[in-house]
Length: 205
Image 1 (spheres, helix red, strand yellow):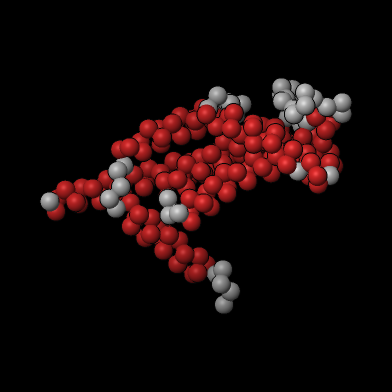
Image 2 (cartoon, one colour):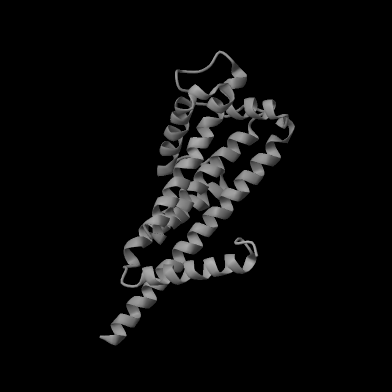
């Protein structure tokens, strides 16, 4: 039987939930509420206005995006242009993996929330590929080539899907919203498990 069978996946997630419950024992839920509430605030604002960039994540995401272009400059024009988005999405995914290796489950929830803000941002950028009305920030002050100046107009044109920019952007934003919801639900569940374990300790005392 293939190791990725449904039963194997179910066993993996059961083990993950059990380990997360064990991790919650002895941890303080109330000190994590402010961060969870901030994630909820960001999630609500970006759901109501996809162009919401005023969160703490906004500047970080922009810096990583522009740094990604510089990082991938050696790899040719297409990868260089795509590099901004690649770096922007890779940063929270790598952070998530680090938290997973460290067994920091609430950190995983926060990393998922961060990934959500990037997907929303990328989705908005994708949907603007034809209209090009978004104000853009470019390393070096701009490009003489307006097509390359807009990452996703260039990428979608090269891929032959420019006419589907809004549909692709919508699906990307929807994925981002779903991941934020997952982050909030997971974070709330972790705090609930912490509160339950704290209550049990109090009763034992």
